[in-house]
Structure formats: C-alpha cells, structure tokens
Image (cartoon, rainbow, N blue to C red):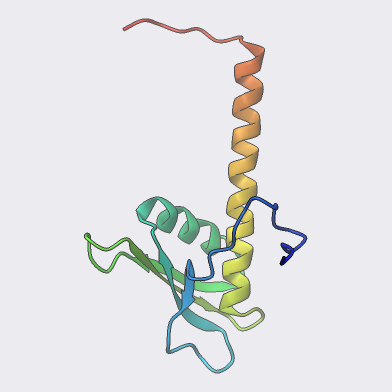
Length: 120
C-alpha cells in the first residue's frame, strides 16, 4: 500500500489533474499559464489578488474560458527572481493561511458569544 506524503493527511487524496501547466511557458520559467479544474471566480479572484501582492510578481490574471465549463485559466508573470510555479505555490499557501486565520478569528468571536442577534 502506498503511503501518503508527510504533508498530506491520510484521508486526503491528491488530485493530479486539478492543476495543469498549459503550453507556452517561458524558457526561464518566469511566465506560465495554468488551468485549474472545477473552479470559478471565487478562487480565481482571491488567488489573483494574493499572488499580485507578491513583490516578485509582475502580472497575474485569470479568466473563465466559457461559462458552461468549470475551468479557470491563470496567467502568472514574474520579474525572474522566482518562477511562475513558485509564485503559484506561494499564492496558494498564502491563501490557505489567510482563510485559516479568518476561520480562527470567526470561531473565537462565536465562542465568546458577545454578539447581538436581531430577528427580521
């Protein structure tokens, strides 16, 4: 039986088809396009925002090729100090950390119970 990598939880399966590197990447790796399956504007816009906050990234944009397809195309261009693949990895890590922080703070406030609710 194959063992999962150390950073992957045992019940979590890796989807090797989730993110594809599209043809046309620059030879030095500073620019590349990716296709992410089964995603939409929710991930596209937030990931684009996080990646653009990286000072090593020159450009990041996304598009949904067609409304009936659940594919997200993402283009990343860097200044050359890091590759587009590294920028994508950093962006995904930063987005996960941001979501975890928001969830933690939200849960803390809910558990404190010091909030008011109003009935409509």
